[in-house]
Length: 360
Ligand code: NAD
Image (cartoon, rainbow, N blue to C red; front, side, top):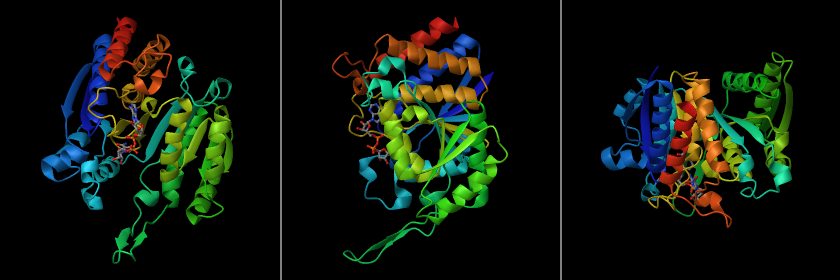
């Protein structure tokens, strides 16, 4: 198969982790007899620096002509004082919209080898396997009007949380379809006691659930869901929620399973899937060669599964990651006191070797 992709390394640790993810993808392609065709484009701070635009037209065109997009991360303190449309993050929000990627799938799976990495006791976190389904194109991140107005000292800021029934219905269907292939449980997370958007959300999700009688649907307020996520993470199967709640809860899930650096994501629903680690550009560790590349590498596994329907190849990458962790390979975020930390490139090379061993 021809695997035609655009790579958007982005900012901070983005280029460091995507480099390793691409090497792993190349190893899988070689091992399974696929052809990889790559082009690299600018997004975020890197694009602002080069073209004063966080998402140049040429980047959008390349992405739309690809079968899938691999993104590193965007965000750079150098642009913190820019107006909203000239911030790196504006490029990220726009590429999601340009690709029509309304369904953000964020698995949080506990690796048995990492029992010592979770801040939770092993008996609580063991067996955690959550699929967070986050609505990605609506809610407060996209709603208008949005503004900061007024004179310093008396400024007023406005954001708008907005959801339409069709937006809720289509993401709910994604969650129920995924639940059918898993443990058949959907927990819909909202704030229906306070927000109108959440009341509509709950109403529509309940209606959609009638088409999936085999799936057990529950509803939970976001504050109590946050608590349950640390108290009983193994109770969760599919967690369905809106854009901002999903953003927050998925980082929390990363903490639960050991490190944000482990979490992968797929943003699907449009013509071209977008795959990226959950973490940001991590300016505090950028350039040091210590970032964990496993979230980016596992995003490649999600790409193989969701954009190319290459299940055996996806499993090969996931097993390779699991194997290197079992062998004791740890980047600094996972090393703790018991392990010596290896670099980003060393971790990537170990996964490449494991993929080669499994696929030849
Ligand atoms: P972050 O995810 O970049 O970092 C949070 C913490 O986790 C930091 O201490 C960082 O060192 C650590 N961390 C993150 N990824 C890691 C990895 N792979 N290996 C080891 N440690 C890792 O979040 P932040 O610091 O809040 O944001 C930094 C910038 O990233 C901001 O500009 C923000 O807007 C942007 N951001 C981008 C995305 C994205 O591109 N999808 C997501 C979140 C934040």
